Image (cartoon, rainbow, N blue to C red; front, side, top):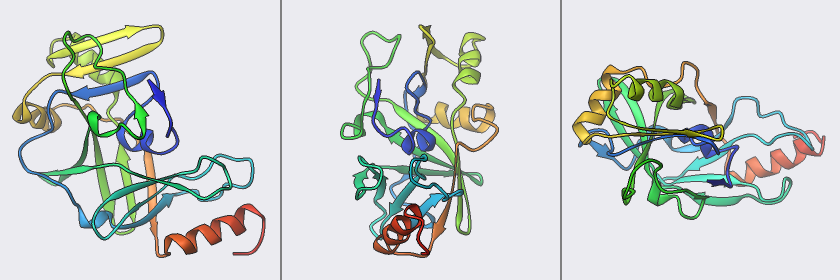
Amino acid sequence: MKIQWVAGICALLALAACTETRFESPPGDEIVACDPAWKGLWVSESEKPTNGETDELAFVVDQECRFILLERPEQDGPPKQIHIPLNYVHDHGKHYIVVADNQLGETVKLDPVHGIEPAPAKSFFIARYQVDHDRLRIWQVDSRRSAHLVIDNVLDGTVDRAHNELHVFIRGDRAKVLDILRKQKIFEDKPGADVHRIRLSLEEYEQRRSARRAGKPS
């Protein structure tokens, strides 16, 4: 699985080059295409990289609620804007983002689901999130924890582990997947992404970022 966006959406949607958990169905029937609380420009909490260091995670959710990841092919060049269709589920005070793997064609080349013949036409990545004013935290699925639940027959699914890779597929219809999210501890204990909203336009952010990386007052 070739990842082209490791610093960004991997943290958001629990993707990794060798570790992943996919679900047969999205959770429940109450799925929406927008959470207005996400609108704005978001950057990682540190926001302190200098020239030669890893860049911060940054993305925009525009007024039409489109999620746009800012990927930088060249470290100090203009960002490439990558639209990724996200969906949202709200259930008993918990909040989840859902993305279908067949919606990621422009961003990452995914192998078919491991351990299933024939492989399903599509499957889903799920992450849990929490918005507190201008802070957004996102928890990834813990694939090792999910694998143990499958191996112990708590969850129906498959585990494919070979060559230091771990691929987990969890079976179930919409109601079953929602029930899993409610009852099973499948997310990591610490958030994989911690970002805050900044009150700047994208142009203003780029100007400030360029000045900071050049060591100039912003």
